[in-house]
Image (cartoon, rainbow, N blue to C red; front, side):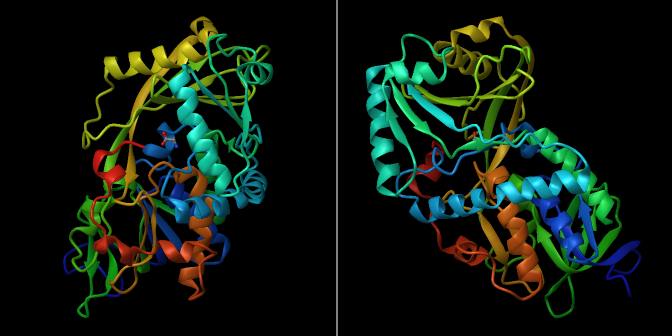
Amino acid sequence: MSNGAPPGQAGRGPFDVAVLGGGVIGLAAAWRFALAGVTVAVVDPSPGHGASWVAAGMLAPVTEAHFGEEPLSELLLAGAAHWEDFAAELEAAADMRVGYRRCGTVVVGLDSSDRRAIDDVLAYQRSLGLDAVRLSASECRGLEPALSPGIRGGAHVPGDHQVDNRALLAALLEACRRAGVEFLARSARRILLDARGGASGAELDDESAVAAGMLVVAAGARSGSLLGHVGGSVPQVRPVKGHIVRLRGGPRAPLLSRTVRGLVQGRACYLVPRSDGSLVIGATSEERGFDGSVQVGQVFALLDDARRLVPGLDELAFEEAICGFRPATPDNAPYVGWTTTERLAVATGHYRNGILLAPITAAALVALYAGAAPPSPMGHFGAERGSHLALGARGALGEP
Ligand code: GLY
């Protein structure tokens, strides 16, 4: 069988690399592989969708730094450092804009206990050397006049930016096509192993198979179903549902000029303004498995919290309410590296930071393929740690 398919199974390839999953991680990796001269196929029935499509596109190494996650925080900062060049190269390659905006973020608390909670996080972030400055309520409103007069203050985080995730996905798809990436519009069902137990390809849902010298599982929250068939030590990934609401506004008088992240009586929410005047509001964080229903109560609560921070959003037009599944792991950090199965790598579990970490993850995978070390500190986030972890406190409850 020259193409690695089991007897009686039509085969495609062999490719140097097959990437199972065409979200932001899979597409960024496929594009970078193709640029490196590697033949690559992306297996996904609907590339450019999934959690990457639902996301808000925040690039937030500082405001996603949580207590006890210092190594992850270091990775987020390293990931952010890749973004400027990545966006410029991608825009040139695809001849499309990705809406990368170095807009910064303002964090606000609605009441005094929200304000205290923000102060605690701020002290932690500053202890890590992160750039965040405490602001009074009037200083917050000086930066963003649409904020409610009722807010109690917050912080300015100049280094947390954004990209238009949907423009990014469109550009990645185009750049992949131009670079010669092959798209197989199927779902991967299971990893195929050769007689020596190494990965040789994947079986697809049309009974065909794709053969490749390296398999990369980048299937987000659904990675577990592929890895579960392989045996050995495999990373644990579970879905954490998030609702997002999109509102349409006018480009001439945008409500906000930078991302606003708020605490509203202990509940987190964010409002991400696009340059066309639209607003992306997120996000819930729910442990409900793969329940894909968009629930009225969650959408209502999200909008209610957001309008308590920015009352003027009542004037915007409703566009969309949607939900997706973050690929969460027991320690909230991704798995990027080789598994114990030969030729099988993973790039999954990016949880709340998939868009931010896509460029550094792609660079790490290309390095692995070449037998080189991944960019620092990605080497600490290999697949092998997955089997040793028990569900951590935050992971078990699923609440950031
Ligand atoms: N990165 C934001 C979220 O996961 O909601």
